[in-house]
Structures are given as structure tokens and as C-alpha cells.
Image 1 (cartoon, one colour):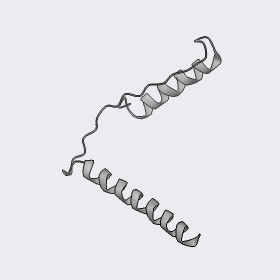
Image 2 (cartoon, helix red, strand yellow; image 1 turned 30 degrees about the vertical axis):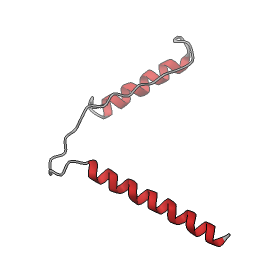
Image 3 (cartoon, helix red, strand yellow; image 1 turned 30 degrees about the horizontal axis):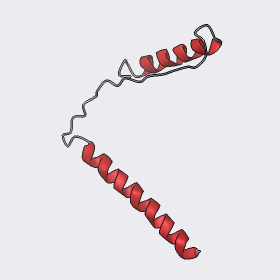
Length: 71
């Protein structure tokens, strides 16, 4: 049982480190960081006149304002 736990832990650590390696390779090597505009989509299953629609639209406006229009 202990051996299986150690193997599982090692596997999780290996996947984590592999993910960090891929993330580092995807970033540009120059000192200047390019900021790209991102598009996020949001959906709601409730009707448009529901209170949650107001909350969602306020939340999305705040995201756009605080990221200076990048999202």
C-alpha cells in the first residue's frame, strides 16, 4: 500500500513538472512581453429578464474595466 502511494505521488509530481516545462517553453524568450487581447464567453441558462443577468453583465463589465479592455 505504501509503495502504491509513493508511486502515485511521484507520478503527480512528474506531471506537474512536465506542465511547468511546457509552460516555460510556450513563453516568448524576449524580455518584452506581448499582451494579446483575450475573448471570454459567458452563458446563462436563465431568461434575460432574470436578476442573475444583471449580476453577470456587471461582473463582465468589471473584468473588462479592470483589465483595461484586454479581456
